[in-house]
Image (cartoon, rainbow, N blue to C red):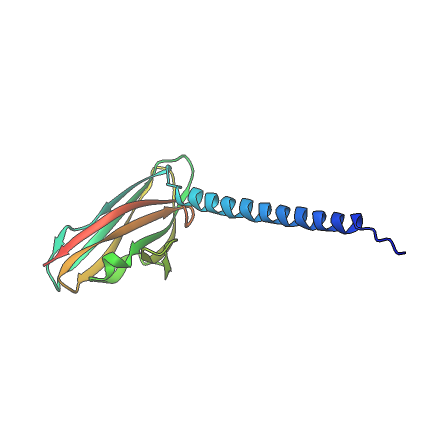
Length: 171
């Protein structure tokens, strides 16, 4: 007569179950940590600079206009005007012909969760304490309509941004 030992098989199943639960717990913690990290990054706003965005509320089709962004360093250390992001929802009615000072490079990105796509203009300009920088976007109105979207001014990194809402009506 043969005897079988089933307690060893039961221990193996228990250890596999414990391992799977531990792996599942790690995945859940990583997921919520990632969401929390993205929320934290998105909630950053520059507190070391005053930022003023001047956008015309109305222009005529075919007319040239300017968007002015004034950044003033209010901290005791040097800051960097990293980039300015303008929503393509807003820019769909306009052509940006250039900037003063000139931007270093440009790219596009979509915001997390879709929603908006942005045109990013990189400046990488240092500002000493109490110094101001005025960046002028020279544009031309192309199509009649009501255009709106976000304008984000990023200081010291691509994630430390102040967001304003832009709206211009083209007649």
